[in-house]
Length: 570
Image (cartoon, rainbow, N blue to C red; front, side, top):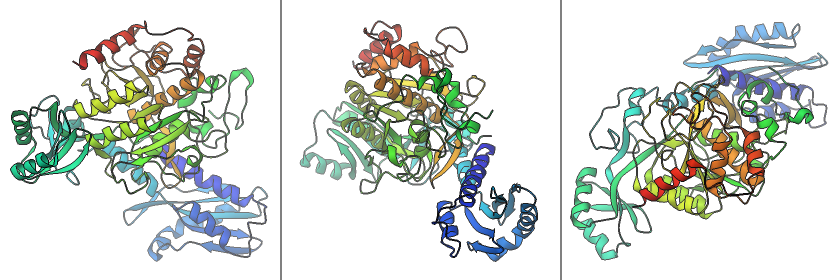
C-alpha cells in the first residue's frame, strides 16, 4: 500500500500548502470557516492546527484517547515546524486504526499548519485489493447463496484460499437463468409458481431469472430441459471485479516541444508511469479524444462529484438498484473511470488517458464487488441502447454464460467496441467475458514491461496494458494506486475512444484491429499467450488509425475472430 499512502500524504500536503499561500479575501482568519472548509474537503483529516500572526486556531474533534496517543507526534511537529518547511511522521496505530501527523509551512515562513490524518483510505484500499487480487476467498456468503464449481462443469469445489478462485466459477445456488423461445404468458408463469414455487427475480424479453425456495440450481436445470426445451438454461453466475496492494520528476506544465505533451496534474509527474510507458504523451499530439465519444464503465458505479471526474460524466444507470443513482460504494468503478477520463491538465490529481472522452457509469456490481449474469448483461444492453461507443468490463468469471454472450453479441452487432480484463489468478484458463470472440481481452504489464505476476494469460489475449500500481481517482474525492487487469483494461478502452475520435469511420472490429496491429511486441516474437499482439502503443495506434483509409478486414486476427463468432452462433 506504499503508493496509496504516498498519494494520500501528497494530496493533503498539497491542499494545506495551497491554503497557506492563498491570499484571497475568502481565507478570513477571523473565523474558523476556512479551516472547516479544509476539513470538509479532506474527511481523512481529523484535526488541524493553524499558527499565524501570533495566534493559533484549531478545527476538528478527535477523541481524547486519540489526541493523547498522538500528542508526542503533534509536539514533534510543533517543534520542527519552526525549523523545517514540512514535516511528516511514520504511520502509528491507535485502537486498531492508523494515523500520521504532518505539518506544512507557508512560503513566507510566517504561518504553518499541523494536521492529524487518518489512513482509512489506505486501509479501505487494502481490503479492496485483498479481495480483488484473490488474496482471500471470494465471494463470501452474504447477499448471494453461492456455490463454487469447477469451470465448464457443475462439479463442486471448495474455495479455501484466494488462489483457489483461479479454478472456480461461482453461481447463486437457488437461481436459474432460462431463455425461452418466446415470452411466457401469465398462465405459464402461474404454472411454474405452482409446480416449483418459483418467483421471477428479473426478466428481459424472453430471458427469465427464477428463484426457488425449495429447489436448487441443478434440479431446476433438469426440470426446464425436460419440460420446456428452452433456447438455453444455465446457472445464474456471479462476476467479480478484477483488480492488489501496491508501492523521475518532469516539468509540471504542458510542453509540446519534441511532440510530447506533459500535463500539469499534480500527481502526474511523480506517480503516473503508465501513460508515458505506452507513448500517451506523444499520441496526444494526434488525438486527445472527443466529447462525442462515450465509454461505458460497466462496474461498481462512479463517484459523480469527484473533482477530477464530475465534468466528464454523462447520465448512467444503476442496474443493482434502479431507484438509486449509479454511485460507487466500492471504489473500483471510480478508479477505472479515472484511468479513462480524469480531467487532464487541470492542476488537480491525476490525468486520464483522454482529454475529452465522456464516461457513462453503469452500476452492475453491488457493494461487495459482485454482480449477477443478469445485471452485467442488462448493463451492457442498456449502455448500447444509450449511445456507448466503447464498453469497459473490468470483471469476470470462468463460466461461459449464454445470457451474457447474447448481450455481448447485441452490443457488438450495434458497433460497440467491447474491452474486458483477463483476470488476476495467474492462470491460462479462459475468463469471461474477456474470452468471447467479440471482446478485446487484456492482460496486465508491470513497469518493466513484463507480464504482471498476477495477470491471467492464454491464446485468447489480444493485447496488454499497464496494470501495476496505477494511480487514479477514488471515492471520497481521493486518489489511490491499485493493481490488476481491472486497471489494464480501461487503458485499452480509453485508447479505443481515442482511435474512434481520430477516425470515426472505422467499425468496431477495425478499431480493435488497429490496436492489435499497432501494439508493441513483447515476449516471444509475434502473438503469444502472455501479451497477445503486444502492449498497446497510443502514438502508433493513432497513426495507424489516421492512415486507415482502406478496410482492415483482411487482418488475420479479424478473420479468426469473425470465424469464431460465426461458429459460436450455430
